[in-house]
Structure formats: C-alpha cells, structure tokens
Image (cartoon, rainbow, N blue to C red; front, side):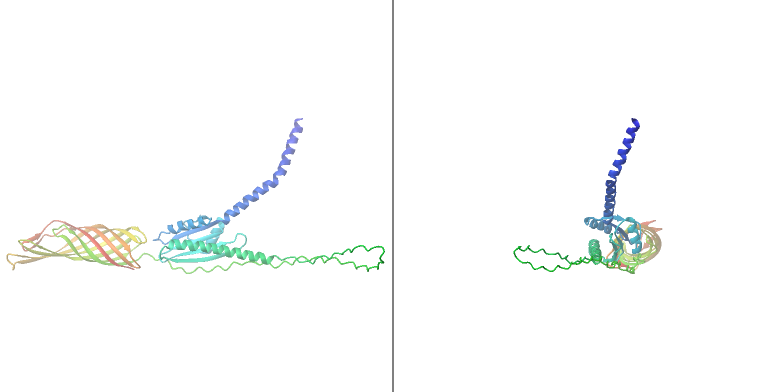
Amino acid sequence: MRHVAQALVRAIRSHYLRAFAPSLACLLACALFVTNVYADSSVLLVVKGAPDLDAAPYELRLRSEFAAEGLEVVTASGRSQRNILDLEGLARRTGAVAALSVYVDAQEVQGRLWVSDPNSSADLVRTLRVVHEGDSVSVFALRAVEALRGARLELEHQRRASATGTNSGETGGPVPTAGVGPTPSPSVAQTPSPVPAPSRPPPKPEPPTPSPRVQVKAPPLAKPARTTAAPGPTRWKVLLGAAGGLDENGLGWIGAPYLDLGYRVSERLALATSLSGPFIRRLSNEAGVVQVDQELLELQARLRLMNTRRLALEGLLSTGPSRISVAGSETTTPSTAASAHAIGWLFGAGIGAEFALTGHWVLGLDFEWLRRVPSPVIFAGSASLTGETDSLILGKLGIGVAF
C-alpha cells in the first residue's frame, strides 16, 4: 500500500510540473523584458574637467535633467573618455543605450553624445559645444537633453521607414459566383439555356516577393574634432601697485609704489622678486629735521594653498636686502647737516591673494611681516634712529597681467 501511495505522489508531482512549465516560461520572458526596458532607459555619463576647473556642477545638472526625462544615469568616474569609440564600448558593456562624454576647459564645454536604437543596429553621434558665457551649466544641460530627444526621434523615424519598406500587401481578385435565377412557371415553354462553361478557379495568389531588406546604416562616426588643450597654468606675472604699512623703527605709517615680477615653476610653486620704495618720511622736532627714504628688494617663494576659477590663495616667504638713507640738519645751526646710508637684510612671511578679472588681467593683494636684522644705528644732525632690530608690517595692492 505504501509503494502505491509513493508512486501516486510522484505522478502528481510530474503532472503539476508539466502543467506549470508554460507559466514558468512566461515569468522568465517577463523578467527578460523588464531587464531590456531598464537598459533602454539608462544613459552613461562621463564628466571630466581641466586640472584647475571644477566640473561637478555640470554633472549634477545633467543628472537632474536626465532624471526629469525618466532616464537612469550610470556614471564612470575617473575615466577619460575623449574618444567616442571607447565611450560606445563602455556604454554597451554597462547596458546603456545612450552615452554622454563631457570635457570642461577654460574656454568652453565640449560634449560627445552617442545614442543607439535597441531594436536595430543603428546609432547616432552628436557633438555639443558651449562657450563660457553666462550660465553655461544650464545652457549645456538643456542642449544635451534636446540633442538626446532629437537623436531618439530620428532613430525611431529610421526604424519605422525601414519597417514600412519591408511590408508588402497581397492582391487578389474577387471569386466569381454563379447566380441562380428564379424557377420558370411550368406553363411557359422553356428554351433550354446554354449551359455555362465551368468557371476556372481563381488563380492561386503567388506569395509576395519580399522586398530586399532595407539596412539602415549608421552614419559614419565623425572624426573626433581637434580640441584645444586645456590651458596650463600661467607662467609669468607682472604687478604694479601701491604698498603701505607701519614701520616700527620710529617712522610710523609709510607708503610707496611697488613692482612685482613672478615666474610659476609648477602648479603649486612660484618664484618672484618685489621692489618696494622709495618710502619717504620727513620727521621734525625742536632739535632738527630728518628725511628718511628706504627701498626693499624681496626674493619670494609663493606656495599656492587654494585655487578656484577666480581666486587663488598663496603663502609666501621672503628675504633680501633693504637700503635706508637719512639726511638731517639742525634748526639752530642750518649749516650743520649730516647724512647716512645703511644696508641691512630682511626676512619675512605673509599671505597673498590673486583675483582673476577678465582675460589675463589679475588683481593682487599681499600682507607681510618683515624683520630687518641687524638694523644699523643712524645719526643725522641732532636726530638719531637707533635699534637692534626693527619690524615692518606691509600691505600691497596692485593690478597686472599674467601670461
């Protein structure tokens, strides 16, 4: 009895497996269809910028616009997809049917858009260029979305035209039928009507000759346009401006013009020379009159701490010679006059800022603390300036060009 029950259970299992096999196949087909639909709604996005530029705003805006179009965005960060063939291969490996490669430099934003038709082998390539004028982030994102829509419509039009060209209609004439007339009355003599010849059956329509399949050839890939390389950091910089500060050697507040000449060794380091002066100050008291003028020549090393598109912050170290000239006379005896000259050495540190105005024009702002050692003892007439060391707090504001 137990063997009979086990055989019955196996038969029932086999029966239900055969009964539900079509349902399982339908579920598998639905899963494959959903996967295909998800792939058709994804776009690959690759955004890269020049070393000194921030491309993150472009990626965020493009993500937002594509999401509004109902597209899933797939990114490939850290890759430089400047070649459209590499971009197409990466898009096919990720399952995306569209790909956009963006490169941001100082002059413009360049883009390559590749769109494929998942139902055929056709694809299209579009090139986008937007100059940095106004809100270039929004302009480029909107143009990219419009280009994607247009490419999709063009591919759909090509596919429908191809499908219309391959379908041909069947033609066939109506089949003639023999009409049956009314039955004549028996009293009326009937003239035997001629027996109609048997009608031939309508010719069997020949199967339509299939028209040759119209193969939609994708337009040849345009050769990558020669793109202007992202400009490297400027090498030379010349600034002319005014310097002012507080001299702790008894001179108080002083001011003078200055001239800076700098050369950028690398993206982070620059070397510069700065000539400030003459700082002229006239001091007078009951004993006499003293006129002091001095010049500073600094050899600077400037290390870039932060750099954006418009603003750069730098830390600076400086050293170099300083010259002081003193001329004085006594008020009681005008014939008594004296003068002295002295050269000392200075060390200093500070911080600087550079603002990019338009083109190559820049605005420079520096704050420095300078120490002159040793400071000479200077006598001029009845007045004297003494001190072992003295400090100078200096600020500079100038405008110039970088090239």
